[in-house]
Length: 44
Image (cartoon, rainbow, N blue to C red; front, side, top):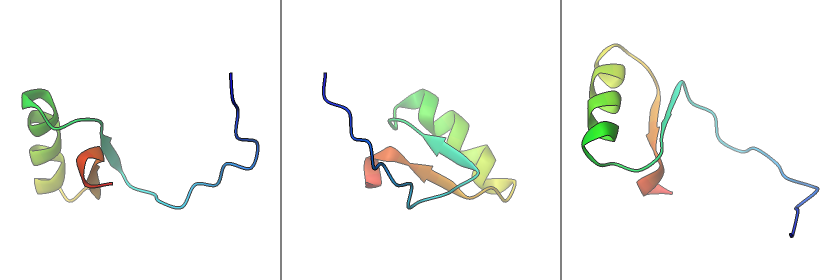
């Protein structure tokens, strides 16, 4: 297994959505409407 030892996090958010199916939309929309910084993984 390959492991990257110098992994750096360059993004931060309140809510990270992995995928954007129905469950992702149900989680992302109300979180956004409540003022959270939401980042769906589909845009990366």
